[in-house]
Image (cartoon, rainbow, N blue to C red):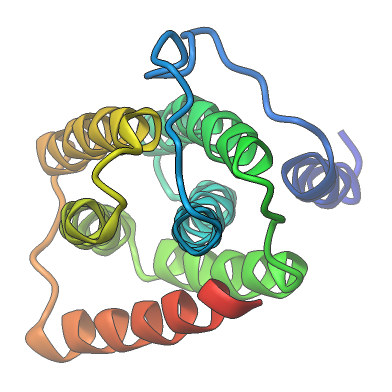
Length: 208
């Protein structure tokens, strides 16, 4: 491989994440359930919430890619790539549900991707234990975020809630993966900064 090949592969992955429908091996959770009767405001709200989740999955792809790019261990690198592949299904499900609800994806997805990839690459450069700690804490916060979303969703929208339930289970599995590979516990300041960044992202993505 030439020196440019890894960079080209990263650009290819970014373009696929942002502009190509993601693959999935599992059926979309809840797709056998009937489409609920929602008011226009409920439908807009549900689509905006699902847009936030889609942005989170775009960021997850970018974080994993950046961390894998700078990982010191081939074992950790392959585990990150495998986790990223598993989460492409979340991209597929959230994008399809947004379309079903008549919504749109975030206009800022390229910005979200670039920022998350940079953060992931920096985390990877800090060493595998820190990088894995970042994965574990990110997944814990995502799991808590998804749990909070369930309380905000229109009660009739069981199709969306089924997607969120499966995503939560998958995030828990990725947390366990990171811990099993030696994830370090991040300092409280780092955890607080991650929560603040996530708050900015979720608030913005609801509207944009």
